Length: 413
Ligand SMILES: Cc1cc2nc3c(=O)[nH]c(=O)nc-3n(C[C@H](O)[C@H](O)[C@H](O)COP(=O)(O)O)c2cc1C
Image (cartoon, rainbow, N blue to C red; front, side, top):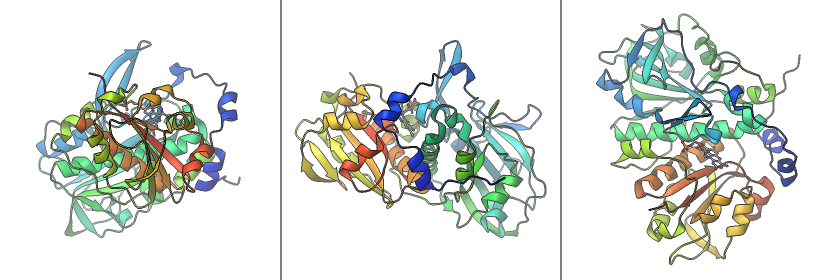
């Protein structure tokens, strides 16, 4: 059988949103059939609470449940990280070595129970060898995986974009958490994802796509993992989209690092952040818009910020933080973003383009947007990532493809 593998440009072509496609949408989502959000290792695995050992407490801020409600008689979880459709197609694994009070091993970060679940003890072996590291890495090696079906269940192949944007948000949180705790992120220079995925027991429905170290390389040699691990399905059922799965599987892991802002109230803003569902433009100060325009933008991206409503600031386009063209673009921007009405109340919308439409540029758009989310929360203003837009209309303001948008505006009260 020939395996169909789409490169990122083919993915873009096949996932363009047009007014015709939106009008033809007939699918009705049966929420009862939503695949499970949290991977669960068997009950017999050894577990350690993130709150029982102080060296683990930073991990409890990486990915955590921040709101729990009941919707249609089912629990509805929201996390510290935003996610397209609140579908959360990610998991996190951590190798822990030489951390006082913790058995050396490879663990799954169980978001639901706030525990590390031991998958495999390690001694002189570990995941280091898949990253080209010949010595044991003391501390933590954080691995993030994508579970495509959680998102493709609703979005089909367009989930490709959302999985990588979500991953960028999660990497942004890792960066900010590590900084807040005075730890340091170590970049890997290489990752053999095929062997890593195989040995970590990832099946056909989950792929490790980003790896970071938090700690230091020691002096003692390390060997490859001795045994392949048990395979646990990340969802209660799955339906494989071969084109989506193969495209994610064949993308190299993301290993880069990008500077994010540092806030003294980080722990609070990380947990309190929510995506805005309405805006009150008069409650936003122009100074905050100026701050947002100053945020550092990853090199792969081009950001066009459109100021829609302000007290004294010029309305219009700002490129690379600088005013470039005056005008009232509110109706055009709302229409571009599929006419989502609440955006009409926003003060500004960031349109995030990239020179190249790749998995990596989507991840960087997510990292940058997470920085916007946390900055907004710090200043008490609302914000929402917007992944639904008419791709062709986005080309009006840049020659580059549009990857993501972010609406920002005043909160009530
Ligand atoms: C990649 C991505 C795309 C999103 N696209 C939209 C969108 O098009 N419209 C919208 O109203 N919200 C959008 N959101 C916000 C999500 O709906 C929101 O994150 C999710 O419902 C969880 O809520 P929370 O962020 O408050 O935790 C998006 C979020 C992400 C991360």
